[in-house]
Length: 72
Image: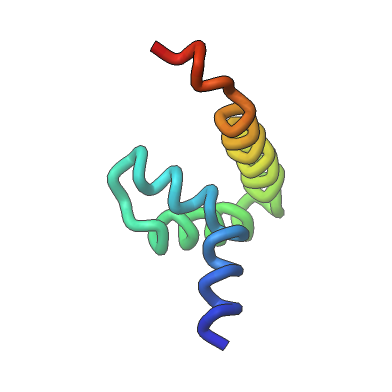
């Protein structure tokens, strides 16, 4: 059960932990802000979350495909 929890947090909440690291907040606080904002604005932060998740995955993919020969 702990493996499932860790994998869900890593993949589903990667955006929140990334934003938390950049801002200097805990991922838990960022998740709460997303939840509160979703209730207050009828779900529009969910779209922002999905866009950020796509952007982070794209960024990770581009880093993997980069050729290390050209890195200086």
